[in-house]
Amino acid sequence: MQIIRTIKDMRAFHKILRTGNKSTGFVPTMGALHEGHLSLVRRSKEENGITVVSIFVNPTQFGPGEDFNRYPRDTVGDLEKLSALDVDAVFMPEDGEMYPETPPAVSIDVGGIGRILCGVSRPGHFNGVATVVAKLFNIVMPDRAYFGQKDLQQTVVIKKLVKELNFDVDIIICPVVREKDGLAMSSRNSYLNPEERKAATVLFRTLKLGEKLILNKGMDNTMDVKRKMEEMIRSEPLADPDYIEIVDPRNLQAMQDIRLPAALCIAARIGNTRLIDNIIIDKK
Ligand code: PAF
Image (tube, rainbow, N blue to C red; front, side, top):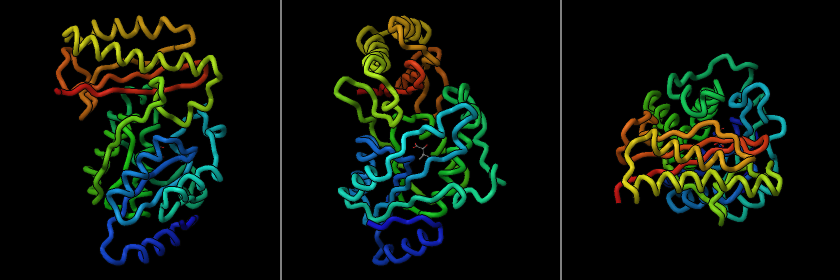
């Protein structure tokens, strides 16, 4: 497994690997790798001759006062996990390699899609994500790139980015990977103390309640379902909900009457940790 720190070396290494018409799968990450990330790497390994993973905690997607400085970093552990999966290359640039100017001289504005849901409390976040993903696509030049459905809004933003800027890359969305008790895996789960970790299961329980109301009880009014879901999350004293929304998973448009496919999306603070989760309900 090659560890690469510069854009020039990444391009040179890829040129050598690419001989023989192998396709390249790419898994962009911010490190602190968990089973969710590793499921993306395994899928890429299954579907491509070459797999490249990036580890870069992208400063432009963190707002002032967010957790950029304390975001979990575990380079040694990450490299061990990736080496065990026989990844071909890990691209680990420094901030100055990715962003020669601070703030960056050029960045991408994803428009309204970046201002709804998580964009309300994280203004500019999705512009930062789109900017770094576009740069990474230009550096790694993958055929396929793998993202987790846990960050549903991010996946919709990236699909839009690829369409609008004509990137020649297939975006593959992989299922949410959960702990045994339903909590969606996230690098930020490591911030939770034991009491908060228990309380954090309320996100998934609330999503499952919404799913049951729609599929088993036949409820089709968004406000009614959201009200019941809100009652559940508020019953957990450590949870402070940011939003509960029911949207079309293809474009994140809110719906008044529930039609399938529908995405139930939730964001909440558990103590000081902001967590997100979603489930997509589709016709059987
Ligand atoms: O999902 C993430 O970890 C990040 O948003 C990404 C896609 C690696 C961009 O920094």
